[in-house]
Amino acid sequence: MQFTFSELKEKEVVNLQDGKKLGKVVDLSFLYPENKLLGIVVPNGKGWHSKKNELFIDIKCIAKIGDDVILVNVGFAKDKPDGKDRCPPSKPPAPKPPVCGAETRRSYEEYE
Image (cartoon, rainbow, N blue to C red):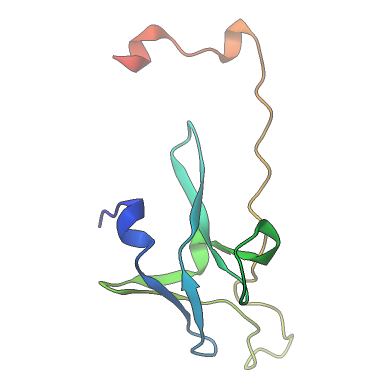
């Protein structure tokens, strides 16, 4: 299944744990050049959007992407005896600093 960011940001994000609407997608987090999607960012709470009021949802917490809704599994598991998060909200991992040097450069053939 393929989506553009324009299509994703129109979809409502709903938590399967409690049925609450978390809002619409405001951002994506991905790694380049690994081409790996890390997760989505939704507003956390009401009010004006700011970096403090955003919730990062890891890609492994996304249960289903439908035509008009994205179902996520975020929250505490009440049926687990340890009470640990099934898929806890977190911050995206910090990007690794680039390493300079000839051994880390790509060859020109990779770009053709």
